[in-house]
Length: 246
Image (cartoon, rainbow, N blue to C red; front, side, top):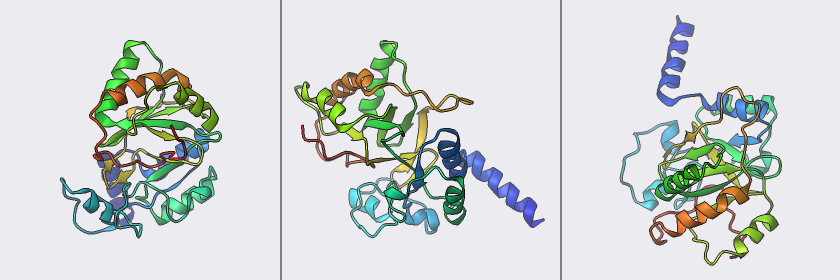
């Protein structure tokens, strides 16, 4: 009877939340070769009252399980283990999520793994419409309530710097998740809401196809520049690459 009840709970969780984080992490690591690790998560994910809407930036930060009371990416970043622990080893992944079944799935970007470019949600939706109008083939797109991230083929800092050097202006709302960065993946629950696939990887494919960064950066810069002026409303998201000076 206990086993049957357990199965029913897992089925209800899947219907409500989509794929379990462990299943998503294993797909990334074992099928796609993407190194992942568990994110820090939120305090409310482990217990306590449901998160209320309309919180201030500081309130959102307090939901994060990390020690920083002003965390700008609540629940959506590595902490313990650190980013360097990201792996494709199935045994390690199973151990992590067996101990922390609701932990967010965090992708370590760069190297052989995808990189990403992200925009505030409204500007990103506009950029996708522009790219669709150009019949541009896109890869997976991760969406959270605040930001959308377009996954692209791995790029180097030098390659990205050359692309941005010729731009008159690169708004700070456009973020780069490159080598040494990270990105939360579906179906992770974070302090700003649940991550989902706006454009999901094709089912049954070995590893999702990824466009080159050159193919999408122009449309993203234009969409970011035409969005609302930067005013601190969009705090930096997980994995932004702040080492670029432009």
